[in-house]
Length: 113
Length: 113
Image (tube, rainbow over all chains, first blue to last red):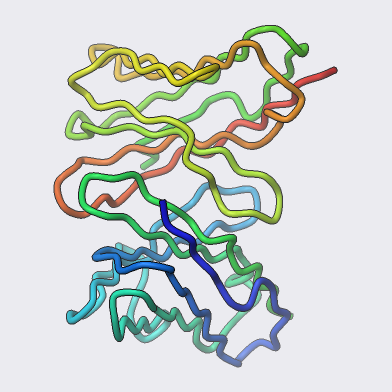
């Protein structure tokens, strides 16, 4: 397993601003993922972040809106840029090692007002 | 296009009885399936998984059944306990190196004492 810490756990932000969410893992992992869970919806993958390469974004998500950094094998950040109320969601960091199940952080509950 | 579907948004069972949660998928390339449990204000917790080369996997009170021809899987919890009350997500992966997961919409399980 892996222990994943996400910061902040929740935030209320003004529209038009940006928020950076941090994800720290207690051990080195190759693959890190960022998911979003909108109210009443399922988890949707935003992007895959691998160390040493550009993040790979899923359809409907773009780097300008959700820039991601992955400076080393234990840390990643997701920024939600130029926020609108539609960005109000739970954002989740996830890690996986080759051939193992993915583990999730506790999530960041974002409310945009 | 919802590739993983959980058609029952909620399920209520009595303590001690069996809980059966269902999941359907459409993508025949999926070869690995997982169940996650999620409590409010927490990230999803891995519960049990199954590879497409198997039709059953058991872990304690939890058993997952896979019917590939029907593109259907189910999670059985027996006996159900009040602490099992949570949202259960079915997820699927097409394997390989990415471990990218496609999630269903979730089923809220309520176990009544």
